[in-house]
Image (cartoon, rainbow, N blue to C red):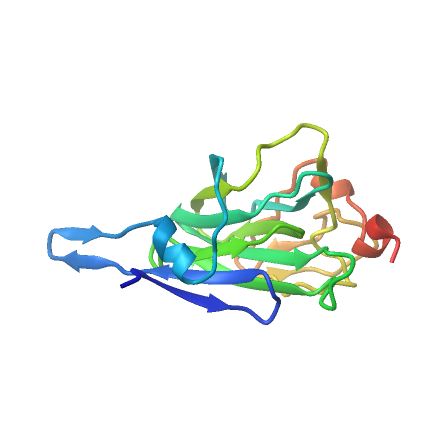
Length: 200
């Protein structure tokens, strides 16, 4: 019997995964990945690399995608909380440009599987977050693309965020409701809209 619960999303190719947690007054145990359980739900991807990042509150990473060698990603948080987002960038998809987001935290133990062909990003809501993910293809320098995290054509509703789009991906004027500024990499602050990137 599978030790996970898999919930499909309104966008095909996205899945929220909840592992069974076995706990008592000593602590807990859970399987964070089991290939047989995934196959039981029709998820037969093969992972080739594990990655981990640490970010402080207000950091927003994304929205990133791969151009020629797309990666499927199984993401989770082992410390803190993030709002994790995927945007459909499959040109022939009837949900192109649509987004889905889910809160991932060390407390809820949820995982998010994002199939190939999506842009991905997350916003850190806790003081600090440690983010882990498995990928189905290796990282290749120069293959990464990106779309603006605040693209009004996509319209992501980032939680606890205050600010107004002013025609660019800059984080200037954006903050969390507690006053924490939004922090972007220089590269992410210069990204274009999904229509500009994909000429649609």
